Length: 624
Ligand code: ATP
Ligand code: MG
Image 1 (cartoon, rainbow, N blue to C red):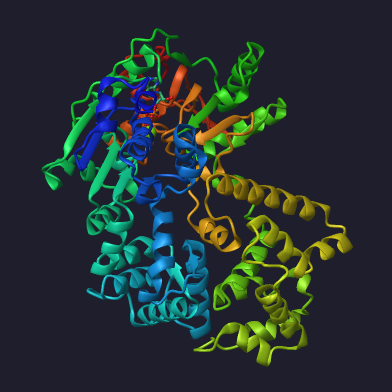
Image 2 (tube, rainbow, N blue to C red):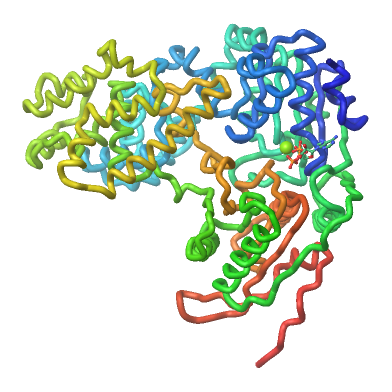
């Protein structure tokens, strides 16, 4: 079996897979097989060293990356073993730690997660209710200050009071802020018995994309202090500094772990020689970097630089034409990725592809079928069923269109004083009007009705049940709201796809798991590789992925590099990531004119990165 597993690996990769050292850093360039090495090592240890996959923990940057790795491992050692592996994001690991140990910080396993939007809504409600004179922003600052132990100055007395009220409500609601997932996990991991528990459970810990870990993530690993630690990454691809990632985690790793083995991989297997060359040439312009080589001798197409289109529209037409010819020549639409520095640039390309009747998939939050008002309410309703203490969820769904409360009834309810220490649902049961009590009864029914098994069925079924119970389906049909029915079907399809993915990977897919995942979704969760469509995504979203053809649009100075950047080296690393996603064909396009405020055109210059890759932009015409 070992022969099989190591077959097709190069010498350095095989060394990394079979190394007996407890702590290993694999520091290597893009497309050198870091992720492949990681998954092969997991398989190897299982097959050869009899390490149970349930004793290994693999932390990835996105859920999709985790699913793909599990798929690969399933190929190597069988589905049953792969399913037992924890291979998911840091955030998802934190959720599992908090489900297990959260009681120590006052959380029950069915806790809710509040994201920024939830947080702001709650704070706004508090400010309104107490007539505090403070801005949401200030309260957020004071919440952060309290989280740090209250060392420092509060923005104002009222802002501080609001912050304290927020934290009180959070606790009452059995909820945690998204930001606290990591810090609370760290807090728990610093308790000896918990660290010991995880150290025993996970004898082997792996981290992919290690260059983008932040300090708290690093501290969690340090507190857990696993016996064996295998991390892989590429400092050239550190692109999340703006969000708190710390590239020093990978650069200082050998200092932190003086006995670690450092393994370098130099052979790139992804991209043709011209692409690898351009990437190397580009990154040499960064001063702050390790010295690494990246080689691939595979001949290939030269990089194409398209400056002919005059406007953003023509640039989009070019994308359409290229996609068209790609398919004419026997290729698939899904071979093509259109990458842009920002989401906004992808809009017009999406529109033009749609006009040409070519399938395109925008991989970003705007494409989220769960963001429609009714669906958000349905989700809040399900949150309330799962966690009846969730006050925010209650407020968000109490005025459901289908629950037929009159405006007056809703208004009376919403004007109630804050919940103090009572459970929100108890208040409804006791004090609400008959319709309000009805609502509470529906929640109770879903919680208690054995036959429905709301908590055990998959999230898709649960969502259907919930929509039915709350009368949404009947309401839509009665009112003939076909649009909303279509929206609901789109949402259900999305949830169903998630359920199937989770199930295939042996991950939980019930409603409770779904609601938690919803708040820790990452950019690649909007990605659907099973569809034959041109993929439109930001460079940040493309991390770790690879495509036959990459079209990188908007290669103007000011767009990429962005004029807002404060760190040109990070911007260049972002460009390096973009370039190294392409396997066979890389096209850079650049509109010469950009409409400003819808009418004025201006001509930006070509991106400095074009030159820095060794390509020559056309000479611009000069004029007065
Ligand atoms: P990134 O830095 O972008 O995350 P990576 O270093 O993780 O890249 P992988 O995604 O593991 O690289 O591998 C890149 C491609 O090269 C994949 O298609 C993989 O299957 C292929 N590959 C890796 N090693 C080999 C090998 N020894 N022989 C053939 N193909 C390989
Ligand atoms: Mg990788």
